[in-house]
Length: 195
Image (tube, rainbow, N blue to C red; front, top):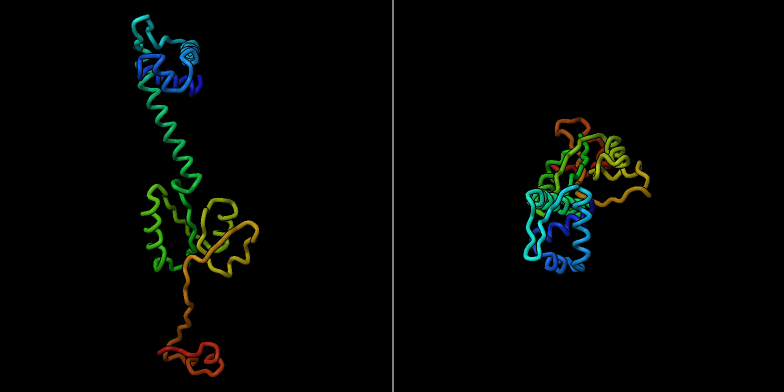
């Protein structure tokens, strides 16, 4: 049984007219009849009662029409989902973040924008160390990893692509009561300290 045979059967069942069904499918009426006959032979059921005056579905044909219609819709839906997944419009996105990274400052807003623009994408957040994220990217258990610039040195540059996702300014913080606050050696490195 082929998808084409099922389509021929469905077209004929909808119109109850083999000529009209063939025209709908842009094929010859003889081709439509032949494909339906082959389908009936393969499944061992008569699907139509054919007379010179009319074409009707048999009880088996009525059941198969309902079930094949659902099946074809499910197949079309599955194909559409697969195509959308291929172009990144649906599916599961596995996002790796550093377990020590404070991503609450930037990640929720970005994820909300992604969910609004691509509602069919499910986002799974995976927390890990630098090494775990690298391994996840390389063995395809993580799709995207949010890491830090210095970690890129440990990736093979021919196997990845990357871009800046969020810029952060590192800060040096020291207690006002620390004896190191006025150390001349450190003042040159960390100068100027803001009060």
